[in-house]
Structure formats: C-alpha cells, structure tokens
Length: 130
Image (cartoon, rainbow, N blue to C red):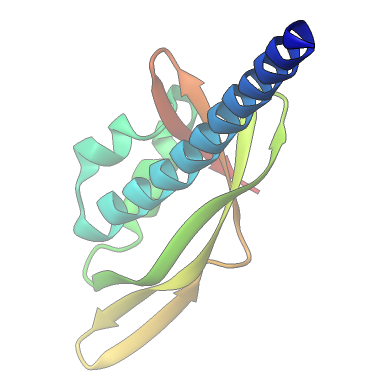
C-alpha cells in the first residue's frame, strides 16, 4: 500500500513538473513578443535586434523604420502562446499599436498576426510573423 502511494505521488510530481515547464515556455513566448513590440514603439533598435533571431534582423529593422516620423504606443497588448511548430512557439497578441502623426491617429490591430518565437542560444527571440 505504501509503495503504491509513493509511486502515485512520484507520478503526480512528474506531471506537475511537465505542466510547469510548459507554462513557463508559453509565458516566455508571450513576454518575448511583448518586449519586442515595446522596443518597436519606443524606437529602441538595439533592443529590437537583441529580441530578433539573426534571420529576422533585417525585417525587424524595416518594421522599426516604418514607424519613423510617428509617435507609436501600445494599447492593451497581451501576447500568449497559441501553439507550436517544431521548435518554434506560435504567439498571438490582442491589442493595438497606436501611431500618431500630427493630429492623425492610426490603429494597427495585432490580433490578426501570429509571431514565431524560438530559442537562440540562451535567449528567446522573435523569428517572424505569419
């Protein structure tokens, strides 16, 4: 009887550890995309490049350049993992990027985009959008 309890308790700990690891990976993916978007609207080129995988750096710079001359900000942005594709985490966000040019306000809804996040070395980075 005691052996069964120890076995069941061990299984419970094992599955709990797996769930915790998966939820941390999902949290990391969402946090990475949110940090990337914050660097984008704050115009922080170095931070954006740090948060971009090497194959995506040129696209990240183009994205940053597209907001030159406007005052962008994030509006209610929350990003969460929605799936995976091989080693990539798929992340979708809700909320908007608001861009003000003079008195004109434009809104860019983020809900239609899926970001691809991967681990490069020890860092989690954005590697593109679908």
